[in-house]
View (cartoon, rainbow over the protein chains, first blue to last red):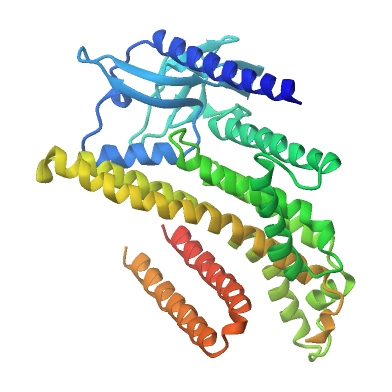
Length: 378
Length: 59
């Protein structure tokens, strides 16, 4: 056991050292680009554009960047693989070939096709066009989007957190085979697991059925919570602020409560007993819309909006440094921004937990409504 | 912008009602605090979902 722990420690240090080395290596071969994303950010519009860019998913993992005195732009981060399905089939390359360009000026040629990245979306150029041309509303006229299966920043985040959770919880589970009380980090996780089981799953689903769904609820709770917390670190993940991710989680809940719904649950939805026959179809429409559209929609929008709004607020407060520089002076603006963003970040730590709790709680509630044996009681 | 303001005013009134009534309930029956809090959070979450949905669609 001692040896295993030492090996894990050594491996994690090695991975950290290796990734730092590749990070700096990748920064060395960056070419300078003096296009618009290489400029310093000063005005309100540039701050807005920067925040919107951060909220979106991106094809590379950039930690920070700065401008040298000669006007050269240095980026620190990892390139990520781009995997796209084009008119010529599957094409893969590293996102570093775009050289951090995001407005379609740098073209990548693969399999005789040219690709450009415009606002974090990969476009394929039509025919033998040699550059992307834009119309007045800044839409590309001679390029079209491709099917994008890339390992984007969010995908990396999901995989990273997924493996982390797998590692933590398999260790916790294994400890119960040999000891009564878990030791080490697992002792932190055990009360959280018990909390989800005893405070969320059992009271909302009921003593009879809760065991079946506790696994899903635990997974969702820790997935959302740890990803929310990862979003607060300087890594800059915004995974739970992506509509696709929250929609997927909401659809999981929808499928689970629809499939495990009892006969009485569906009867009450489609053909409500105890009300006049004429009203039953109207009630059925309302109930079906509620169960199949409104419930998952409220789940997905709540998580997405809360996390995205949190990120926007934190970044806007950090941007006070630049926007109020003239009126408050450098020291005043920086101090104000530090104080405000510190407290908002503390609130965001609470929100990270609260949103994971609410998502799990409402999932448990919806499942509980569907599997309840005595739904006739009301 | 006016729509966003109206949404926030509505959500604020709603949250105030929920929080105030929950406080009253807890003051009357302190032994039911846990149950009242759970119900309060669920209602607040539903309201918040509605408000965010409106903000999101209105944008």
